[in-house]
Structures are given as structure tokens and as C-alpha cells.
Length: 118
Figure 1 (cartoon, rainbow, N blue to C red):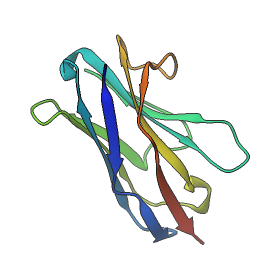
Figure 2 (figure 1 turned 180 degrees about the vertical axis):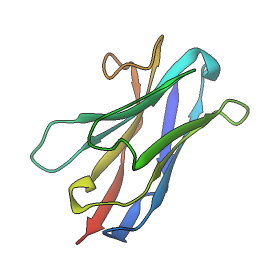
Figure 3 (figure 1 turned 135 degrees about the vertical axis):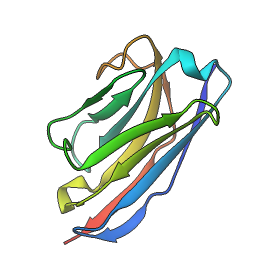
């Protein structure tokens, strides 16, 4: 069983940057693909980015967001630059065996709010 805890969310202005962190415990961290998802009010949860040895990004965040991981600390990060109002959502950290694809994640964090004011 893998436990995931997100941190680093908050309220920022459009154009600002924010870094989310996710602490993982309970599994062999390096064996997992790790991902970030988000869910805005009234919308379905959507893929943002994922990483294992390679990375994958949603088109809506390419060039603005960067996902990274530190296997020595069992942490992943999401550096979000040039934030827009439409990035406002609850952001979730997730883990799965295998490749960093945008689906079939087995473990989820509780989520953390990111609000971007325009």
C-alpha cells in the first residue's frame, strides 16, 4: 500500500509560479510511475503530468509545468510557471506500477487546492 501526501498549494495571481510536492511512503518508490492530476469545479479529473524514467505532459501545461522526482527522498514535484486562472483546481498526486501513462493509477493522495486569481 502506498500513501501519498501533497503539499505546496495555495492562492496565487495569474503569471505567478508555485511548486507542489508529494511525499510517498509504503512502497518501493523507484518502481512506481508517479503522476499529477487535477480536478476543477464541475469538471472531470484530468491528467497533468507523469514521470518514471521519462516524462509525459498534458498539452495544456507543456512548456509551463515541469514534473520531477527525487528517489532518494521518495518525493515528486510539480513546478508550475506562468499560471493561469484555468489552472485553478484540486491537484492530486498518484502512483502506479509501470510506465508514466495518463491512466490506470492505483494510489491517490487527498488532493490540494491551487487557486489562480486573474
